[in-house]
Image (cartoon, rainbow, N blue to C red; front, side, top):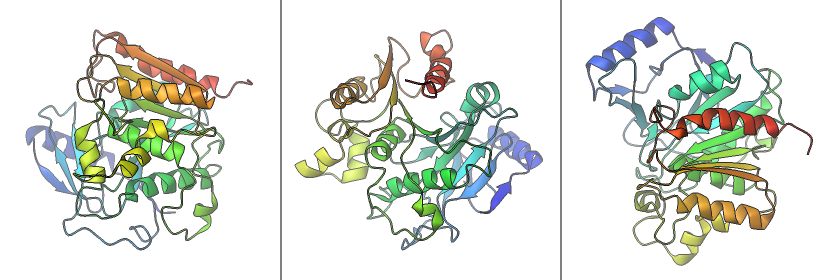
Length: 329
């Protein structure tokens, strides 16, 4: 499995350049200009998923921040999905597949990626694998491509667990916003056959041992729907059958992973009803769950938008909950 160490000096130079030139578009070929020390890991040896075709437009990374210390990049037009791994100095054996949000229009890289490293990697001892997944609204007809990427990522991490110093039974998923919808799709549909299996990695289970859904898109039916995610995933006139199939509160099963839910009640982008509906379904199915609702925080707060708010407690709450999943029940 090719793992490419990114040059820290190049990363620093890129970060400085990006801070000076907001809106700069960078072609995502070769090394990704990541922030901090990280490894880039391809999901498939050939780069693209079996049977897939490249998009007409190449992948690009766009910086939106004017502050070099607070990068805010996103990637889109992904044809060759991959992971970026952040490893702690003192690993605790647990790994988390991080699935950032972006409304199924883009994949954010920093607010729900690199910004997690201080609390979850450096302090929490987790190994994070942040996913750059294929998007449904870019001319790609396969709406299951993102789920295929998430399944493959879980299988790849589990396949290499011993090699990477991880416990193969302590590998979870963490999804934010629309990435929370994708994480829930993985948790409810880890055994769905959405891509042709081609090697020993695909013999591994894609079921997360636990999942954390952060202000997630869950339902595609009713007033709590995030309309942009629904349209990009299902089109402008989806059938009732499709709406039910992709509304995750209706797909919970007894073997859905134990779930941690987090939401701000003043979220006016993805209403808190998404988490409430999913939590109710988990309880009905007998799935262990923990939910934290905060009065303020809005949407997309990650770890940066919590200053002065009680939402600042969420990383430690999440770490405590993950640790509890390893205790005898």
